[in-house]
Amino acid sequence: MRPTSSIKGTVTEAVFGCAHERGDRPALIDLGAGVVYGYRRLAEEVTRGASGLVRRGARRSQVAGIHVDNAAAQTLAVHTVIAAGGVAAPLASGSGETAGLLARWDARLLITTPDLAEASLQAAEASRVRQVIAFGRARDTVDFADLLLLDPGPLPLFDPSVQPALLTEDEGLLTHRDLIVRMRELGRLTVLEKSDVLLVTWPLACTLAMTTLVGLALMRGALVVVAPGLSPAELSATIHDFGVTVVALLDGAIQRV
Image (cartoon, rainbow, N blue to C red; front, side, top):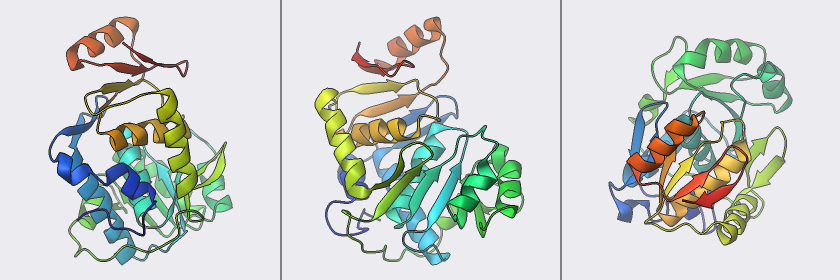
């Protein structure tokens, strides 16, 4: 299922518009989660997952909380919600304010990972969340994989200049256009090409920065390797093992190796 969520100018089209042509080339490797995505698979799971959300009642501009413990899950969840016309709202995995934020944002959907499922269910019960989706089997949740099995349907149409896409605790609400502008501005400062291997060492709490940088890299056809919390020796070994050409360091710097 190709990215056809709306008219030109959506985040989905910008990030995944060339994914099918790139085929099985590696797109995203999450070393902590042990997950590898090729371009075609990642784009298909985003769009099929988005279609599944719509079939399960997700409405345009509804907020979906994202409470996960790895970068691959966060990337997939954020872009699936955005493609479905929703507003992705990542939450810090250690936040004690999860239920309060979900209630304040009037979230009706929460996406999580199995290890955080129990905490996510407790937060959902204290808010207006109606369904919890997990990347894997977990009690009282819907497995994300089940969304991919539903018959694909059309994704919502919207104007990307005004359609909200991302909600963060610090930066507030951003539209599709806002996110794309941020990616392009970063692209002028950080040149990424399809031959590049980008290593990201940032924690998930860097929501907007992570979404912007990973989105830019996927837009350009680069390979993204995510490995937070590396020691200096591990960082050096990872750069060598994966042929890393660009590193996003903990201090926020992005530099060529």
